[in-house]
Image (cartoon, rainbow, N blue to C red; front, side, top):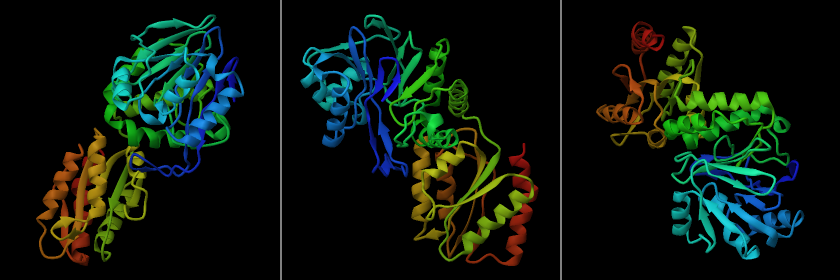
Length: 394
């Protein structure tokens, strides 16, 4: 598919992908690769190492040029969903040279897919392809140490690899064609579940790219950003997310065994929303785990509510907190509640898990034995009104 003059998208759609690194990808994904036709023909990134996907990409390339005429293959990132067809391409284009970052060279070598002909490119190094110029920017930890982006100066196109991407597969290629609200939501989900730990590195990358005139962002997953207002919006969102700027809503994340913790969670919901705080309720056994980090992007406060099982918090809640501990959100307040049967010491573990996931625990939790009584519900309401809600609104 042609995306600009002499520039083509030659990647593939993975309609069947439902899970990527632990989060649910209900819309599938794409593995985007881009072909630049000039005096020197350049391929930017490849596709996942699947026989079907490699074959499709080679067919896409062959419909435009003979594959053996490729002069350069740019590897912006060594992860196999982008580097999986490098060897296949290099075999068909024996004169081609692979271009990668220093860490990219190391990682491709460890994967056993570093070709004999390669060149490490420096940060901000430029390469002429004839009438066009490629400029390489090292963007370590966006999201691997080897990550870089490639900028086509004359066309103002940023080939951003994992930055600004989404796991979202469509037959169209542009965000405005797919529906900007949908694509922005998918971009938020992608950022929340993959890039959240790397905010400092992302800010550095955004600063390095700030002076560029970007008229198109072509990521390695999902839709291409081509409208000025959409490019400005996704860059603004990335800046906000990378700075861990909290939103304005509260989340109640809970699970329940016999309904007791659900009563506590619902009481929290009623009290918080009744005080004017936009509040959402998530039952972790009913919802996709990857929706929770996505919602935390726009949240300022999270209630974690769990019952106790075998002197531990419920495994579903444990899974959520282990997952969140790797993402390391900052600037979010939290609080805990739950129901127990005969010993409540496991709630110390719950609060420890919440703190380990980098949330600011604003007060000791509220815990009840079995089903909460009317008196305990009133106590919970009072605690929320007098202690917790004022802390949220600070």
